Structure formats: structure tokens, C-alpha cells
Image (cartoon, rainbow, N blue to C red; front, side, top):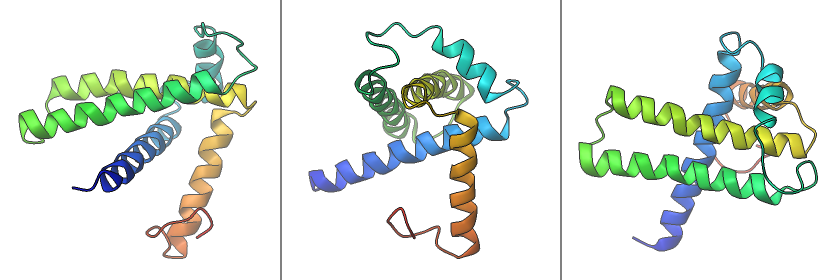
Length: 141
């Protein structure tokens, strides 16, 4: 298989994982109180240099954690025929939590609220769904 196809596939997987994490967190926000509360508490655990002044660390961290999620899915397919076990589900819960942490850190650097990000994303997706434009490519479809 062409490496560009693999790269495109993995980027798509990472994007889908990030969007699913945001959607799930938005959908179940009452279980975790609010995104705001999560964001405020989670950012206190940030230990990287120049907090509040850099996009590099959280962007690279997000990429790394999304890659770990993709790696676990790859190994699930390779080692377990794609069968999702309770143990796998728990591992993914922790990994997706790490993805959420980095999404929050990146949002913090951009002075964006997770609620706002989730809301804008849902508006975009629902608009696409209404116009039968979920499939395809491009941000402005």
C-alpha cells in the first residue's frame, strides 16, 4: 500500500477520534459537570514550559496521543481480530482522556472554551447533515 494512502488514513482516523472525543464529552457533559469545570481542573495539571504562550507542546501532545489511540486500534485488529473487549474499552477510555487533556490544553492556549468548540462543531455537522454534505471533503462543504 502506498505510504501516502496510509498517512491520509491515519490523519483521518486521528481527526475522527478527536471529533468523537469532543462529541462524547459534549453529549455526556452532565456526568462530568461541565466542560468548564473539567477544563479549569485539568489545566492545573499542565507542566509544560510557557503555558499560555505556546501551541507547540499541546499540538504535538495531541498528535502523539491520537497516534497512541490509532496504534491500539491497529493492534486490536492485528492481535484480536478487531474484537473489542472490556479491557480494550478501559484502555481506550484512558487514552481518549489523554486526547481530551491535550485538546483542552490547546484550547487553553487559544483562549477557547471546550463548550464553544463542541457547540460550533455540532452546528457544522448538523448543517452538513441537513444539506446531505456529511461525506466529501473540505471544511466549507
